[in-house]
Image (tube, rainbow over all chains, first blue to last red; front, side, top):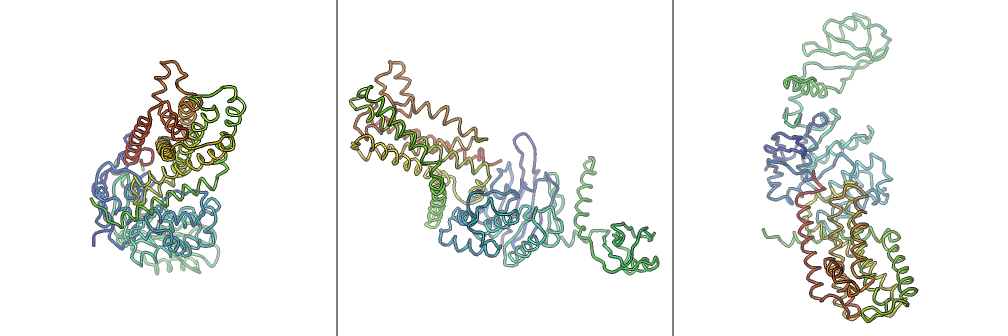
Amino acid sequence: MPPALAVAALVKTYRGGLQALKGVDLRVDAGDFFALLGPNGAGKSTLIGIIASLVTKTSGQVRVFGHDLDQDPEAVKSCIGLVPQEFNFNLFLPAGEVVVNQAGYYGIPRREARVRAQRYLRQLDLWERRDTEMRRLSGGMKRRLMIARALVHEPRLLILDEPTAGVDIEIRRSMWAFLKDLNAQGTTIILTTHYLEEAESLCRNIAIINDGEIAERTSIAALLGRLHTETFVLNLKGRVTELPELGGFVLNHVDDCTLEVEMNREHTINGLFDALSRNGIEVLSLRNKQNRLERMFLDMVDQNHADAGGAP
Amino acid sequence: MTRGAGTWRRYRVTFATIFGKEFRRFTRIWVQTVLPSVITTTLYFLIFGELIGGRIGPMDGLPYLDFIVPGLVLMAVITNAYSNVVSSFYSSKFSRYVEELLVSPAPNWVILAGYVAGGVARGLTVGATVMLVAMLFTRIEIHSPAVTLLVLCMTAVLFSLGGFINAIYANSFDDISIVPTFVLTPLTYLGGVFYSIDLLPGFWQAVSLANPVLYMVNGFRYGLHGVTDIPLGWAFAIILAFIVGLTWFSLSLLRRGVGIKS
């Protein structure tokens, strides 16, 4: 099976001279759940824009499930569903009509479009709001509606650009569950996000784009395996007002009943508890602080800046 | 590359979706889209036809009220066809929901056809309503229904294309009102709506012949009354040439993504 996405030597230079992409090569296999990460202005949205035909490329090649964007743009577009970062719908239309119209743009007859719209609006808990004008929906509802709209033509590749930005935790979790289920059913998903926890929880593979180039392309597991430190959050039984000296462990005071411990890979949890016990500190519970990928990401971006001789 | 029946069926659905969306848009807000032209032209009929027209006397052998009916109907068609496309397509750019179409496999010519059909529908709806109003003031016997309908449709197509191009280039809501105010209205008023160009001195007659609206008004006047300042063949040829030119230009703009892609 051809890859879901194969990008080769992709360059985008905007009018005015800004080079947003400097020869990007990227491959995403069919069925993958793929994260595309990068700081603001790194070129993520430009890359997605080119794949989705919203931005004109300067040079290079884009193939989606074997279809070439230049040779057969209609086939490429039929394979892709896009959930953009910014809201982009007619605010005066009812939610249901937005989804039905989108199906129509893909050539799906109106009767079938209504059936599909109902299916996806129900799955995303929006069916009761089908007659509500878009401008009256909450931010979270609008985000979910953009997912329903992107799925109504049943694309093989779903691209989500910051899909959970500004969405509360409960809705974010339900969106994650929905996307995981969709991926399990065979839809390839590419996700850009600023919530690195999101990439860690959902995705199998990852590319980090920085300054218009792919800085890293690997699996999430391999990336996390390279981490040298890990941070744990400890809930304490008593109060600790002064931090004790624990050899090899870096302690941070969150509040009198909560500490953060940063530990190297050479150290063990047993060693940590021994050291805490020696200082009379009892631990009620412990959890891993979900910042591992963030740490890795920041280290990588800093390293790139240092290599380029610039300030971080 | 040949296209199968499935592809054409898909194009037909896409076209129907865009047209349906446009049709529902202008009918839903009919107070803003249909009513103003009807009120304005009713006032024209009342003032220029009933009150002043009687003192002006016949024009091209027609009572003055009958003479201005074709021009006023056509003016309503031109304004509404243009306004519908320019405001709808620019709004889709402004609120970025044009992206719904750009990411879809809809070919550029289907997108253009859908928007133009929406403009034609509004132009003809308002034109027909104005014609009904005109019938309250005078008796209209259509000389050639085929010519009448053809000129109406072609004019609506032409100005829908004009509205589309304006929307592509527009960067603000001001930009979509500049052309109607400073180009469309003068062209229409000087296009023989209220007078026969025979009344103009030779130089200004020649200048008037450069105004495409003149050919449409006269073509339509022939359809209604059998009277025209311009040979009918010329009128059709000029309108058709503009339609072909503007269609080619619109598709070229869409292909290059001018104003809609970065």
